Length: 186
Image (tube, rainbow, N blue to C red; front, side):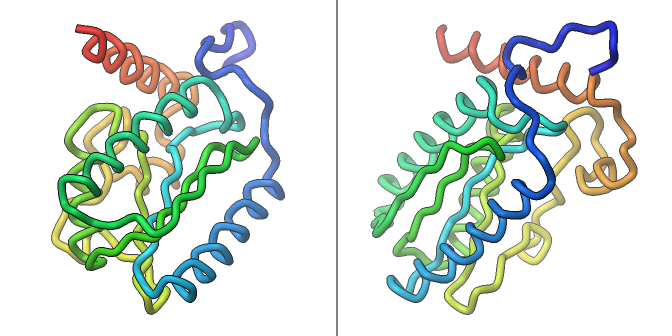
């Protein structure tokens, strides 16, 4: 946030360092491989899109809870058994790993639909790792790339170029969270 702006209440928390982010990513990759080796099914890795240095905050935790509920409902509707489910609440942000008895491309297609169905889904990052330890991409399944929180460009493009300020990204997240809160309580 710029020096004169107060940090939005939902974003407040401790800044996380690059080393902590790398350590969390390394742990996830090792755990994904272990779960695939143990269960012989695809693994779904769920993290939350939270730009800036604060990854564990009220917004991220609320988005994780909502994503977990939506994913649980998807598995129930699809009759996909969840063989393992692990949630971690870290300074690097909340994360979850699920070993799911489902075909990997069907799982990825369904989670892309979850991400794209609801405004809060734009904060969810469902990655599907198949039994060969390859991550499935949206584009490989014919879906559009994830959209930027602020504009309609691909999120990867805006993120790499730092096209939007952190202030503007946090305003977009606040709008998503406030809008979801309002519709969830109607």
